[in-house]
Image 1: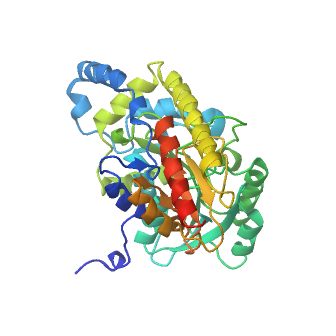
Image 2 (image 1 turned 45 degrees about the horizontal axis):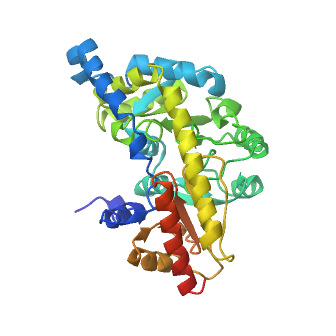
Image 3 (image 1 turned 60 degrees about the horizontal axis):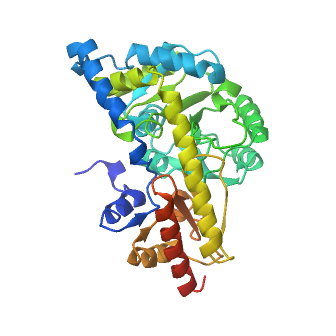
Length: 390
């Protein structure tokens, strides 16, 4: 009765955990959620009145599939210093980056197509690719991002429909692709004529260190597509994101989107546009960076206090996640069950590994909890680890 591709479809482990964490008293390090107390609620309230007054009924009407033209023009101007010359015709607005991944999958993947990803990789992207029955192949990664020698080895036997990666503060690890590897990747892409999907939802959330140039800017429009979103910087409920690509690809994506939802919601686009040009957006980004950096530092300090020396973790220079590695042979899934009994949730790392490895890893989100909550949650997890003899 169902389509063939539905047979292997599984619910996201992260979404399943989010159902559990809704119970009272639960401390969650599980979801990739921005801090709701930092949403610009009052500004959006004021802008809603202005939009409905200035735009009138057009703010509630159907609009063009590619997206609100003033917003696309603003994006083109903002992105051009990093991505290179970008025009409004190079941009399509989507219902969140997840829809962008869905549209790209529809456009480029047939049953059995090959996709290269980092190992580990964003679980939402893996779901999208697997829904279209792609053969997802994992390229090893380390603290500097995807390993270019491993990529070259894989390209000796397979050429993908496209390669997907998050070069900045990656979900789940928080790792960024080093400058050296970005340059190497640009050369490999040119040499093999690859298509690369650069997903950058966390790039604005940089706390320290140097901001590396985009892959799109290094490699050019012919071989790269760029995704980003306002979900992590304004509010996810607005569902406004975008894809930047060669104009011919944008035309094809518009055709695919027409058969999906016709257009991204007009009111949400108007609100985002008015907010980003209001002058308060830069100040809001600064507040997010300051707050999230403090919460990252609080989590690391708590880990140093309460976790055994057998567990290691990284110190990302931005984003929303820490990546932890348990002793070999440990199971993060088992630890999760015991942690839930203590009203603490996190995401076991194995769900991010297409090759099924990573049983002894876990992802912790630090953006969504206040410092005192972070301290208490890590303390409880530390007690669980001690009882289990980790």
